[in-house]
Length: 268
View 1 (cartoon, rainbow, N blue to C red):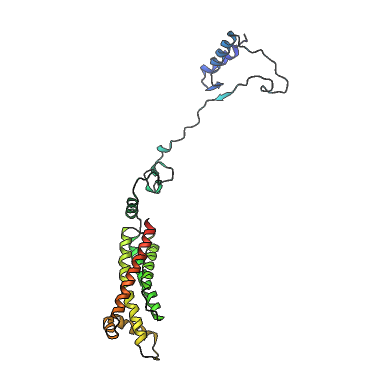
View 2: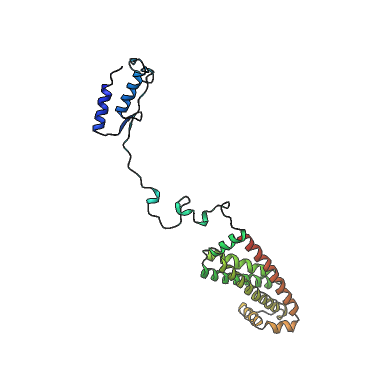
């Protein structure tokens, strides 16, 4: 049996001064006892002197790993840290209750329920959106009137009004929710009504104004505005009531199709 006094002594010193060092996962005393037990069972390996300039692994000797068991400073657990304000991180603890990070597979709501939730949770700017919708309606009416000014009396300005109201509202409000839908529909209906009226006022001015007369732009606008305010009288005078009504109906029909396509694409 090999003399293990040095290991025993090392174990005694380790017990007196707990440094936390181990040999192959055991204290020096435990390691010495293990070697003694192996020696008693005849498992002791013969001592082979190492070759000069060679490592223990090259001489076929078992290597001994001495580990320093001094624990590193304990890092704070993520849950112990105070929660930061603002949007949750993608994998943070408070992200699991946020619908923005819910996968489609885990969302068992119906399509209709998801659309309604998206409308209610919208962060649209209502006041800015309303201003944008008004500007969009005015822009659509101006485009419609410009088409009539070129001599084309058409209902095609109605979809232009809807598109203008929709996209300028979205530009100003940054999102579309329940209020946004109501505002867009309301301003589109008003814009189509007044746009069609303005279109006919421009058409009446062009068709029935004195031929070859040189009129200043300011006077033209003033005359169109006068016709716009008393359009009913001019429609009766020139027999354009039916044409006006048909243009209005077709305009609203085409506008409804346009709005339906926009909202379906937005909330499907």
